[in-house]
Image 1 (cartoon, rainbow, N blue to C red):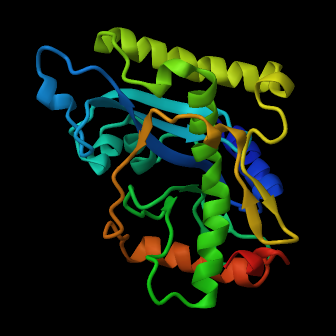
Image 2: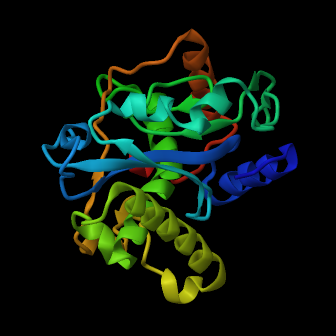
Amino acid sequence: MPCTEEEWLQKSQQFAEKWNFPHCIGALDGKHVLIKAPKQRGSLYHNYKGTHSVVLMALADAEYKFQYINVGCFGRISDGGVFNACSLSNKLADNSLGIPTPRPLPGRTKPVPFVIVADDAFAMKSYIMKPYAFRNLHGEQRIFNYRLSRARRIIENAFGLASARFRILRRPIELGVEKLIHVVSAICVLHNFLMTRSKRLYAPYGSFDVENHETGTIEPGEWRQSTQGLVDLHVNPHLRGNLEAKNVQREFTEYFHQEGEVPWQYKYI
């Protein structure tokens, strides 16, 4: 994970260049990794789907690489509770990661924080952006949701490719929890290594979702054809943000509709 302001700025620049989302420093999500029910304390691992799991929480950069992972939380813990228990959550809250101070989006004057993009499994904060609730949305809000979804899709595809390539993730893992944590952590490290050193073999074109700006459609990545053993976190659209978070969301909304507009965005709403 980046340690200095310069490294975070590089991550942000990659999101701006590749995914047209400035001030973004990562895409956040979590998955339930299915396990065989432990003989002892099995109820701790019983999740909302009725299966047993531990949770893998991860933050991806703009190039589908995991820049932070936390694996091992009990499957029964609420999804918000899982993130709150992560070191990343605590360091974001106390601003101890060396993330740059707020500054204006390109062409604007109001300083806003650098942010992480996430979905409705997480509570919105000034540094965590999530979509508007899908009801009675006007055009600017739908554009914001598309632009956020476009950037957030990175972590979804990173999880998907890792599960497709490392088949142990496709079914309940029959290992003790401590060994399982080591295995899942090693998979994330290998994923990053292969994305860096052997991307053409590990993730050739078509592996990830691709947008067709001519038709306004998304061509599914090859990983979606594989059986997925990783289970989504439980979505809670009622986890809304405070006024500060909503003001940041509004600033991004105006930016994407004005200075940061891209011509194809209207085809996806």
